Image (cartoon, rainbow, N blue to C red; front, side, top):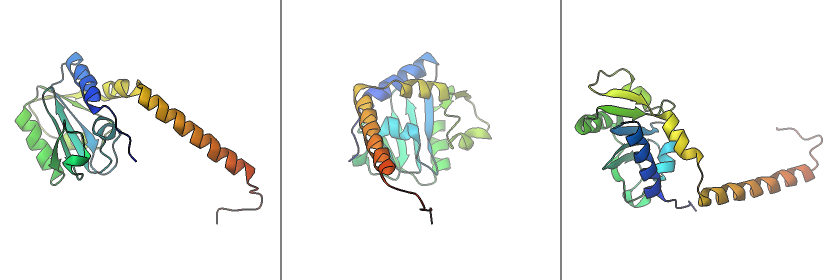
Length: 165
């Protein structure tokens, strides 16, 4: 079962960072792999999954259905991703667009001539995600306990003479 997080609070924190950096919109996600930001802000475990966030709106291009994602997101089909994301950004007309330089969506904007400034928002994404709330700490502690039990079971097993094959 997938845990339910407070996505509204996470979006509020993201928008505060956007204001601090004078960023009108951010784009993040993964075109061909699971993206940590898409999961953190929207709970999206599918790919492709690309989100565009402004101060007033949150759009996500996903293969998941709208009832599988937070209601704060307008879910759009993940077809013709590059074209549709480009059109959405042009519609928003940001002066400054925040991008995650570790995301494969960066390549979608790398070579395009645009009227907006591209801003490296990676550090801001990481600053928000590194602070854990009570629920996240509890999940981390649970994962540690499971790992300890698994390691103990392996250590109790006599593995001498066994190979991977």
